[in-house]
Image 1: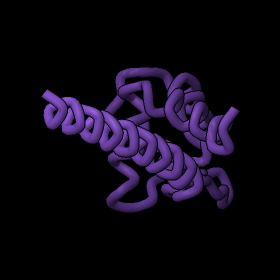
Image 2: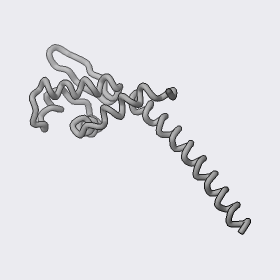
Image 3: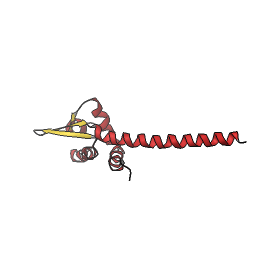
Image 4: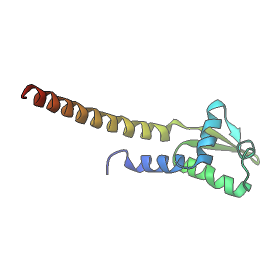
Length: 111
């Protein structure tokens, strides 16, 4: 297992759902309460809160509670782990493509 694997798995699982992606997109502009986030979705509040819990476990959002109101904000922690994993994959594939390019150039010169 790579050093990023555990966090990355949770991040990608969380982002695999369109509802959760829309929540992340909404939170880019500003923090929002549970009710504000749930408003555009046609589902019960308990079902929607489960989506928020998945995002929070993945480290993509954090929440604070003041009285009966819970407010959600974006958290860079989850995205940082995914970004690190993606950067590592990019480095690996760029290296492989460079090796393929060198091999093909060598083959072309030897013909």
